[in-house]
Amino acid sequence: MLGFASVLLVADRSSDGGGGAFAAQASAVPGSADERAVTTSGALQTEIFPLLLFAVAGMMLFVSANDLLMLFVALEVLSLPLYLLCGLARRRRLLSQEAAVKYFLLGAFSSAFFLYGLALLYGYTGSISLDAIRTSALSGTHDDTLLILGLGLLSVGLLFKIGAAPFHSWIPDVYQGAPTPITAFMGSATKVAAFGALIRVYYVSFAGLGWDWRPVAWAVAILTMVVGSIFAVTQTDVKRMLAYSSVAHAGFILVGVIALNRAGLSGSLFYLLAYGLTTIGAFGILTLVRDPDGEATHLSRWAGLGRRSPLVAGVFALFLLALAGIPLTSGFTGKFAVFSAAVSGGATPLVVVGAVVSAMAAFFYVRVIVMMFFAEPVADGPVVVIPGGATATALAVAAAVTVVLGVFPQPVLDLANHAVPFLR
Image 1 (cartoon, rainbow, N blue to C red):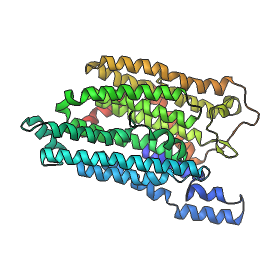
Image 2: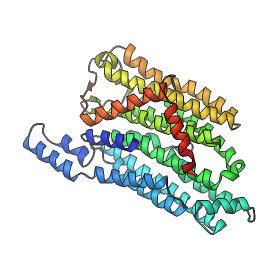
Image 3: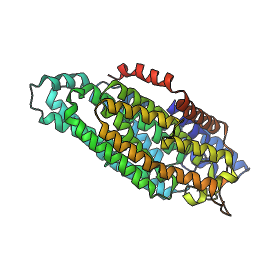
Image 4: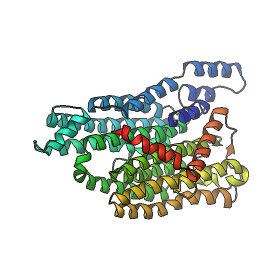
C-alpha cells in the first residue's frame, strides 16, 4: 500500500523538477509543440519508474530474506536506485546532486559495515542462515566475541537505513535535496522495509540474546527520539523539519522492537503503516504549495495558508496532528500500541522518555498549524496548485486512513497481530 501510494505521488508530480519525467514539463514552453513532444518523450522514456520498480523489488526481498547474503543483495538493490533518484531534481540541481553524493558515500560506508558483520557471523557459525545463527548462538559452545562484533557491525548497516541516531546525519540533507515525491517514497516505503529487515534479524537470529543487544538498543532509541525532536524544533525549512521528525519516529518504533514480545511486534507493524501513509500525505501536500522558483518549503512562506487555501491547510494540519500523536489520529494509536507493549516488556523508563519527547515534539508540529491559520498571509505568498488525479487519490487515501486508524484501529491491530508469526 505504501509503495503504491508513493508511486501515485511520483507519477502525478512528475513535473517536480528532476531528471526524466521530473524535468520534461519544466524544460519546455507551456502550450508549445516542444512541450507536447518533450512531455510525451518523458512519459515514455523516463528512468524514474524503472528505478522505482527496482527499489520496490529490493524492499520486498529485504523483508523476506532468510539469510544474510540475500539481505545484503536486497539492501544494494533497493539502495542503488535511490542514490540515482535523489539526484534528479532539476530546479535545485546542486542541492540535489550534493544530497545524492552524500547519500551514496554514507550508504556505501554503512553497507561495508553490514558486509563485515556478515563475514564475522559466518566465521562464528559457519552459516549465513538466520535460523542457523540463532541455533549456534543459543548453543553456547563457541566464544561469543565474533557473535557480538558481528551483531554490532550488522546493526550499523540496519540502523543507518532506518535513520536512527547517531547514523541519521544523511537524512536532513537527502530529504531536503531529493525531489519531494522521492522523499515521500524514501520516508515511507524505505523506512518500512528497513524496519522489517531489522525486526527479522533481531527476532529470528538474536532474540535469545536480548540482554546482549537490548541495553545498546535502549541507548540508540533514546538518542534517536531526543536528537530528532530537538533538531526539528530549530528548523525553518518544512522538509528538514519532517526529516528530523522521521528520525524521532524511528526512535518511537524502536521502543516497540525493544519490547521483545508479540505486542511490541504488532504495535511496530501498525505504527509503520500509520506513519508511512501520514508521511506520504504530508510530503504530498508539500508538492502543491509552490513559489515561482518551485516548492515553497521555507516555514515563513506558509503563513496564512489556511486563509488562502483552507482545504489544503486543513489536510496538512491533520497529518501534522497525526505525526504529533494527537488522539483520534493514527499516530496516537501507534504510539499507544508501542508504549503499552514496552511497559509490558519491562521498558517503562524508555516509555517515560518517549512520552516526554512526544510532548516536546508536538511543539514544532503545532507551530506550523498556528502559522497557517493564525498568522497574516504574506503579500507575495505561494500558490496552491490543483492536484492531479493520482496525487488527489494518494492524499485522500492517506487522510482517510489517518482518521480511520485513529477512530477504529482494532481491525488493523488484529491483522498486525496475526501477521507476527510470519516475521519469525
